[in-house]
Amino acid sequence: MYLGPEGEIAIALSRDPVARGVARILGVEDRPLGSCCSVVRRGELLILVYDGDSLELPPEEKLRSLGIGHIVVPSRHEMARPRPMLTAHTPGVPPSLSVAYAELKTWLFRELCLERPPEFECALEATHHEPNTEIVSATFIEIGSTEREWNDERPLKGLSWILGELPNYKPANAPVIMSVGDLHYSMVTQMALDGLANVGHIIHKDVATRDLVAQAFNKHVKRPERVIFFKKSVKSPIRNEIIEKLKELGVPIELKG
Image (cartoon, rainbow, N blue to C red; front, side, top):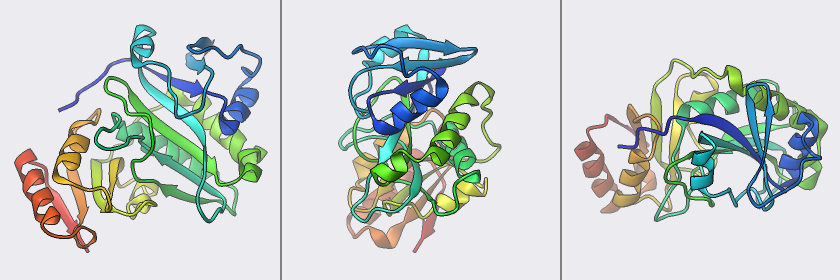
């Protein structure tokens, strides 16, 4: 089971258009972009400004040397049929995944969506795209889905305000859950918005396997207290293999569908 790390929460600002908008609002856009890293403090708020795309985090060893245990990445969101959206997810590409900080991700997502512009939808996304982390948790919080939304001052200001509140972050008193056999835009989104759960890894139905589910379960800052399994989305024999593995891990399973 993954139990750490202890360390500060830092915001990672790359060349991504949403990240640059956040940098401008937070007053750090004039900091030089280095491969790793220009470090900025605003009171208790820790910010890293670095070159590259949002999917290219600074090396984890460097982050840990700075006392960082958790990284938050503001980023653009893209989709095949674009519409205004606010999303959050843990990154990771099979066969590996990043460390999920369910409580932090859910807090950021919920707070951002409380003040969303009326035309914006909110959705937790399944775990996807790089990077894969091993010793630092990673959380993506995104504005989408076109250049128009990436440069929209309303969600940018909302996101910047939430990130500025990170020193005051306190996890919600709700169970940590993991979702398996889910859709890309997760069916447990409303549970997170309603404060009923802190959602960690969300394993999409098309990539769910026994081994990946076990790895996802073990890569959480806090062990999931329950796994929601949309069983009809995953065909046998993989479905039965996943259920058996979850039983081996000793986690309660909530079967849906």
